[in-house]
Length: 295
Image 1 (cartoon, rainbow, N blue to C red):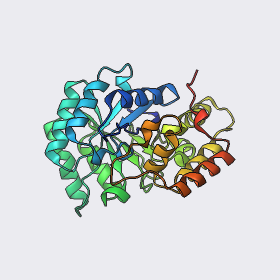
Image 2 (spheres, rainbow, N blue to C red; image 1 turned 30 degrees about the horizontal axis):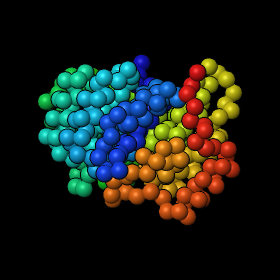
Image 3 (cartoon, rainbow, N blue to C red; image 1 turned 90 degrees about the horizontal axis):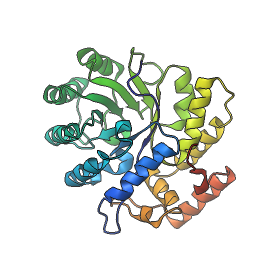
Image 4 (tube, rainbow, N blue to C red; image 1 turned 30 degrees about the vertical axis):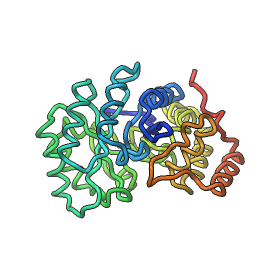
């Protein structure tokens, strides 16, 4: 049985007007993602501006999340290039009873599969009792996991390497490992993924599509006809025309102006792109009122 399964959002981070991480509002946002349909939430992934947020702010938020009523549903993203800082953040998280981590190989440098295996080996030698979801996103880090690399890591660390978020989409169709959670990074891959044995998704746009994605997931397992999948994929396709973080913050700012705050080097959508985004979503009858709590 897969270690993690279902609809997971890669959460946004909520910032104050001075661009400091707002712990209270970020926790509220994360908890609401569970309320509107997510089985769980990945915190401090790329969508959460993880590389741009200081380690001290991450620690403060993780402390706040440890008091959340949904704390057992969270995956902590490290979002750090430094091996030492990654290990230290994991140690702090574990001291607060978080055990699931989303970890991408370091960005900027060029390296091989053997180097990636060494990177995760160093982490697990320091923190043996942990559950790691590999983060496969070549567009961001410059490295794309190979099938052989993942298989070798799972063979070497079967209790620690328990899944993979596939945002490069080169593995979710062909990599088959028993008791391993394969999670594509897009709603457009959800239904197909479930049909071929994937465990669910971890995606940025589930910040706004969670109710639709949850219906697709639940209908699949209950054997009902799929009535929400086309709209779910169409909404994802609209957001993919823009930078996802920019588009999501722009969309969510309709609900609360606090979402207008975003860290440089990122920015909100231009007025022209904002207009096009809302027009295209309106054609799909998708707006901020779609974000309703699941009964």
